[in-house]
Length: 555
Image 1 (spheres, rainbow, N blue to C red):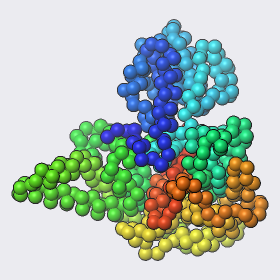
Image 2: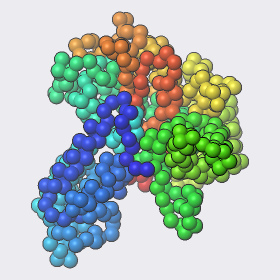
Image 3: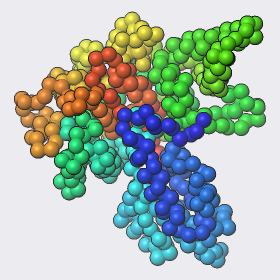
Image 4: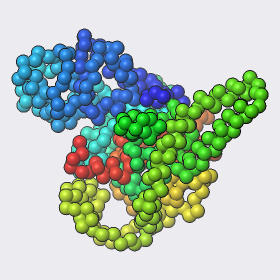
């Protein structure tokens, strides 16, 4: 199965975006004649794998290398560096060029920044005395489709940069990406934002519309009816809970990166030689699309039923006479056998983690904390050591760790939004709480309310959550925010004029979990739901990766 996801069923024409990104990259490479070595920022290699196949790059005379501290081994006289605008990478490129000069190597150097060049980076090239040797450009890759309904802005450090370092460049990046969407699909008329970063993105988007306007009259009815922006800070409970959907557990234990997991070949039925393989995970795999959002307990049952059914079909094939039509049906089922085998192997591997007493104990602790009951926890430094002091300082600076001066408002929030649901039916769910077996993610409850009736219905609860909130109509309409009166605000999202379901883009500043996306898909699929939901995120996260962002080794 291809690594690049099939986007034919996407609610928006994501294929055109991907093709444009591919063309932009290939044009850069075509303009550098002859053979060239493409030295990739390692963090970008996964992103590019979702846009262009390696074979196409090779057709354009490209020799691929990953940028590292080791000298670049290539016979090519042209070296193209494709990197994010990060200072450590600029110094690394400078050291490679200085090394080549010291060895008397004659090479041409090209540096393309993703998504844009910065003055600070070019200044370092000048300080390192290599700027005059470089041809510098930009590769404007602001977002990539991870799947039919998920866009990633590929901003791994956005949350830390904004919350700890006070760097708002990632917020500009998110606004720019949304504005690019608007040039293709029309100006989004309704914007709702919650959190400091989200409100800032909404304001930057407004400025971009003034400076580089999308003309509503040229575009017709906008394809995206509403933009909902949410800061991760608004709900830090959810990523800290263990995800219990199939896709969520794959991420918790195996780390899903750019739509695939990397694991030992032996787990997937290969030889026991320690070789690693990448297993793609996207909706091109029909079985994965069917089971990815289910609670893991149910996935095991579904796979067992499918395997039993296939076994019965095989028995009938070998013991009875079949019509041509029945033979065709059986062959069609056989075609799905590789998918079945893949997911049975993955589910079996996941079960080795989920059956451990340590995992079950963790779920008990999480449930106790979410319920709002007291729990006797030892001091973090005593448990983990003083080397975590810088991380704790960063968490405090980001507002995620604070001394409790007064009674927590969590119980009020939990009751008002019905975040804990008793006796959740994970096999036949009627509520989003199935994704955590009884806890409804706060972030998605907010989306559920705002989709129905705007911020107005949860105004008092919003005041208890971090950051300001904002609600505005664009295209000549007046702004409404938490500081203004909400009178005259529509009670629900406007319906698209031609009667189609409205499209809502939900953007997470600071990352989203796979379980939250599953909850959004569940909402979108409900009878009577008038809206299709698509997701934009700075990155995919879980509890581990959120905390790693604040560790000083993050880069």
